[in-house]
Image (cartoon, rainbow over all chains, first blue to last red; front, side, top):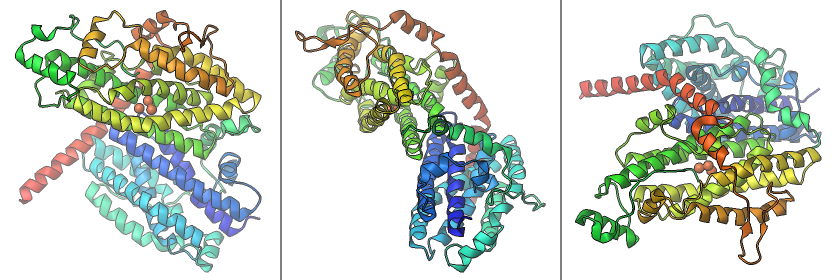
Length: 251
Length: 330
Ligand SMILES: [Fe+2]
Ligand SMILES: [Fe+2]
Ligand SMILES: [Fe+2]
């Protein structure tokens, strides 16, 4: 049985790993050059954060697994990312909507973690806050710009929001792992972040002239690993292929 | 080098005495090592030639993202993935600096992009080759960025100010690119049997195309003579190619890899490496659009541009709305 702390660290690290991978799929084919640069930069930050979270998870576990071992040698059921992160890129609007929803949650979460009773977690969070503040500003601006752009861009952004909305709720559902984190003062109760998230979201969506779906139904199973979507397995076949095909090689 | 076969006026280089006063002053400034700035008078040929050259260089940075992007999602460690992302991000940044430099000459980035997408303007032949194994990420950094540096370092002294300044920024980053490539090659060349095989295979496939990056011999080219008089080309193609082989051959030896050219060895008399010319027929085929990846590369860029249209239009429309709202408020 894994310790709650290990589980929690995998959740943080798998979010950034899986989303970082998705964003990196945009390499070289963004709508404008500035976006190529910004997307690569976001992916780079997320992969850097992954190294810290999964590196710490490996230390906490104490079985000799490092960040690479965790990233490249676990199968789908051991991944702990939220389902939102593994959703396919779709068009640029869907990618940026996914990014905006995640960034907004991520930033609130990281700011809370900066006050963690665990110094190492607080330090990782503090470093990440700087990067994610920029990600969030950028994704919010893009969602606003495209929501309030042309008829077509508005339609595409609304469609993206409708499609991704069912994956938002999971970010705020707590379980035993979260309870243990709250008890030790390590991490906040996920549900307690919702009000701030909703306020920020509502403000941005209003500017973007987009409508939040009325139905709050939430898919779940990513952060617990109980049931990922079919997309994650395909991502891992790419991400892990070299490590799996040449297990004795070092790179 | 990222600019190949750039045409100039097609006429011979004029002597100072044959020039009108404006042109003569311009040429004397260049001869004295001075810089030409965007507002300065310049011959039409100089301007056109520079647009072609800088544009081709910029396009190469942009298309050059694709063969490396091909491996970002398959990078074998988090560290390698991060390094490759950082490198590709740099390349996109290089494209941006260079388009900005070209814009000072009176074209827009959109004009240049249109000419790239229609196939009217070229990008370096090297990016029409596929990246087939992880070792290719090593070979590209080591050989392709290595060859690019050979050309770009002297261009820091080129006569056109904005181009020279762009080159200074770019060169700072290129040496990191080459180092990370060589580092991948070291790991592979000293790794398992399969890794060594990948490394040798990558060198076999990229050696010739890397030599072609400098372009065919231009000893007798009127275009090159004019470009050199204008100091927008600093060395002949053969000179740079020789320098590249002299630098690279000992590195291959250090890696324990074999250059796919039996004649490539140090010539005690000249102090330089002898080497065989690459297959120039293949080079011209690639230039005509028949390289292994020409079709995919151009399709990928066209698709990105077409798919991105609604995004560009949406953001422009939003910016316009905000501007008029601000005006109305004033
Ligand atoms: Fe570059
Ligand atoms: Fe390059
Ligand atoms: Fe480079």
